[in-house]
Image (cartoon, rainbow, N blue to C red; front, side, top):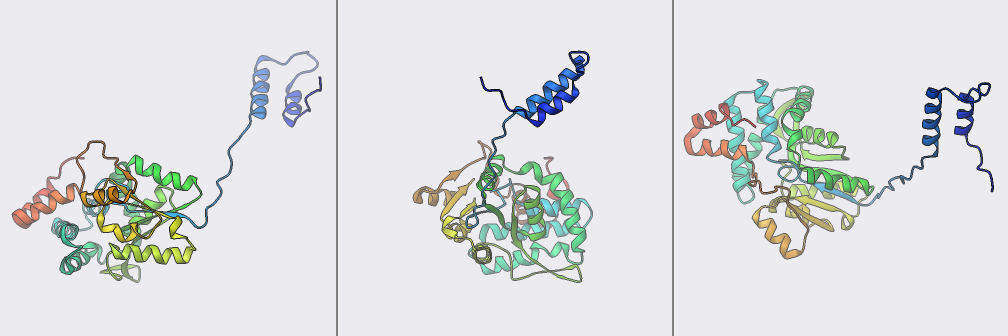
Length: 308
């Protein structure tokens, strides 16, 4: 029989033994056994081979996480006394009308633009970003769909880069991407001057066709082949982005997107597990209060919000 070739582990183990006494103490023997086992263990974990020309693009609200991220962000700022209940209600009402009618009505889009980030006007970018980290931990982390998280990880494991594409402010989108270990984010850009928000947007909300434009620009910059890329969304409003890529996916889809995805043979992922669809969830309830009962009712909804 051919003798096994000595290894560094054998040498280390031999040094631990007390050759003069014939056998090592029990504690040394255990250490030797552990060292030998670790040295003999085979590690078969191939490195991820980067796929430079393929990537994945994920919408955020109701695709990556339950509900509207901008609402939870604003709610967190309000809880920290960054603005008042009246501003909160105005923001909710603007976002609600945008979600319900913004795709068809330019006036609603303009109203949503005004409301989207007006509540941070005059605030320092650094302060809002720092608070965003806290707000993510407090109210957003537990809202991430586990199934969506697994989808992002599958792309990362395949060596592909993964970006969020969302109307959410870029500062918050980048926090979400970083906390989830993703490549980066495309989000709504707010105008700043000397490190302070002016309350205006650069161009407008990253929504609908603007998302497609952002993905196209990024693909050109990063030399991506969009026919090899994937996109995920819950809303038919993201159809321009979905149609850009070779592998569109519907996640927790609204009725229109579900029908379209079924007709076109796109994969449909539904992680709601019988839960009532959360089309903006609490924001819808608060916004409905504004429309039905006026400002006072909306403030009441905000002040007496349902525990989560």
